[in-house]
Image (cartoon, rainbow, N blue to C red; front, side, top):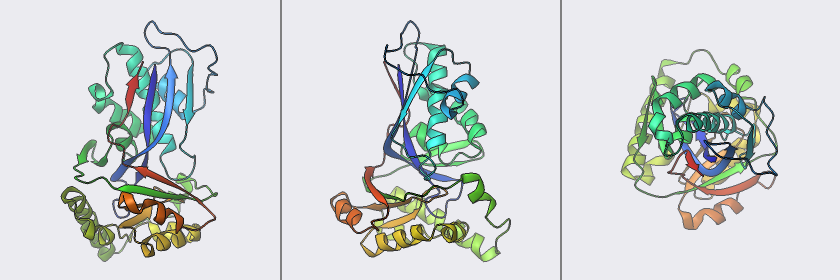
Length: 278
């Protein structure tokens, strides 16, 4: 059996640790289901992999094999996707045929968040789409349009723990109000399909400037994307990847306008979340 889980882009600018969207870039985990068998040529993944550790966390047995197109350490939710995949596989192995990941959505969200430390990239990988998460709850934001998501991925990597440690422990009141307003506007603009408000709605004063200081090329890429006509853009997760939204027909032109020292991917918003196939 195979679990397929989408990558994610977290924060979406101002929604620090609360907003994320699922991307059409996937991690696959294959495992022995009830009465099933591993392909003879499958090479088991090492036990220290976050997906395997999550699988064992919920009692998964037997070898698993993981393949992924999600780059590691780039702010596209690799570890979150792997953990969701491992947990889904363990639950599917326990419940047998007919199991659907959303049957155990609450447990998945709780355990995966505990393993990952925050839910903003976990929730989209479970549910798909754009998801707001806080206080143990996760709610999909309606998205009445289908944007292209153009991501710019530099060769450098970022440690999430180091990136978070570099953030200021407190912020001015005005900056907190600024981000609350932008986050509310962003959720409303996405739900209403108001693309004209997205650029303002993705502005941030809490975390991106500190992270751009450690990855100045990412700031250059974001500015280039906005100058080239992107509706909006943000530092994906803790970076250094930049994610942008635009009309599908403009995606290739936008990708060509981004700095050549990184590579681009033209993606869509995944709406299926974690899925299980025989």
